[in-house]
Image 1: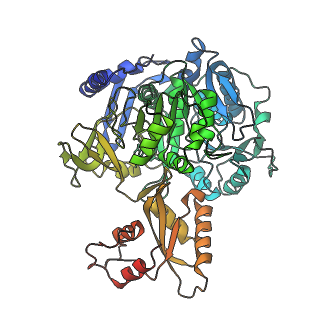
Image 2: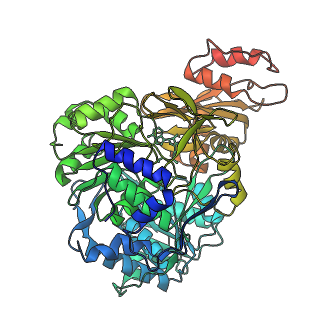
Image 3: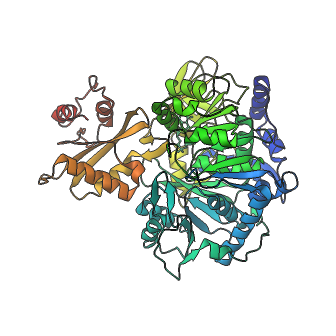
Length: 632
Ligand code: PRX
């Protein structure tokens, strides 16, 4: 069994051991898993080339760890409890035995449709059990999954399918989301019209709505599963074989496919899950993330299932049928660990305490936060109103690239400090550096957050472009992984994450590149130029503020332009990227060399344009007055 830390002293001792002898530390954890063949060497690494291998030479299948090994010890324990969008629809519970059978059936169905080891399979699905089942089925047969959040547009989906040359898309007819019914298959149809690699579209019937059908390409999931065996031998995978690709935004260019490998990812997500949340046998754990993001991959599916936990999956949204839905589910399922994002906490806090007070939340033992900085007010409301002052909050800092939680309290062990992610997990060696890359060793400082030693679940490459991964993460500071975040360290060595220092913004916990949004806006035929920045937003954490210049002859009123811009962004990325504020300006503030001074745009967007600093390098300083005068 994966070990669990029980006190702060034990954390400190474990941490020290993990730094002094990382290989010994991680091999003792890895020993608690099921291997087809044990590794020959624990670690080989070279950050400069981004060549990192963990458990070298090991052979395994992650689904044997998530499923088969639990059949002996907990076959009838709930593995997944699924809660539907509509509270009147039935909850579905899949025991480990049932989940194993369903995954094997799905794996056989995928094979019958021609899928094989190494193929890339794209998912565009609502939060239904079949999503988890089919993800695990891919892993069972060694196919690589690439789950795309089902809020992205057809064109964003097509880009991701093409980048990974996926051979199949798994989707549903539609998606129930709150009071809305979303036409999922229509989006997929539009995407696959431009994806030559797609041979099959496997469709789950969920909403029953009418869909277009291509007999050569489209297959109903229930037909594909019909008659399939509930046994499927797990493919033998190398420790370093790719488990999945997950697209995420950076400061430049199109989203990149972050590649995670098998063994290190499994070991790290399991270990961190068990320790951060202090999961005990019999507990019911619920992470509200969508499986379209890394949090869903690591802490709904792989970490919890490998640890033999009961993991809850929720199809709906926190405010449907009302703002008490999360708490109703916690009460109904007697959830012990609850993990969500600050944006949801803030949104629910704004709806009033009565939605919480109606429900019995006494089952909660640990509360988690992820995805963005949690502000002090939200932290206290979460702690006092939801946790009734008795449950620790684990503020977990990590990233798509890190695969698992990097800096976080260990529940009930690490002393808490509101808004601080506190201490690094065992095996994680964070450092703060100045802008020249010098390591800052003192405390009570602020710096750029890097990691100086490999950890098992770290990114291995960006799909199809290894140089890009090296340039993005390992070129900035020699021999260090650069996170893109700035952080503070207090006198006790606790970390507080300040936020991104690059052109990445975090909107409702969704990571977005400002360049990506600008590219989408530029698709509008009458837009000449766009510049996008983030600004503080009470609920979303950050909002999107777009400055645009229009062609001279455009006669439209501003409302029409704003609507069209929002539509164009929705079409090219998805509704989550729609700018909150759009300001039409005469010109953007540029230096003589043509560089946009984003610092000025950020200050105007933040409402702190009183102090703009030095603007003497601007080509035309008068544009600043125009921008300030028209600020939204
Ligand atoms: O800026 C940090 C912020 O989210 C970024 C990573 O986003 P993504 O890859 O989408 O993964 C989110 C879920 C793991 C980070 O660079 N972030 C994440 N967690 C926290 C956070 N910022 C502050 N506090 C956190 N706990």
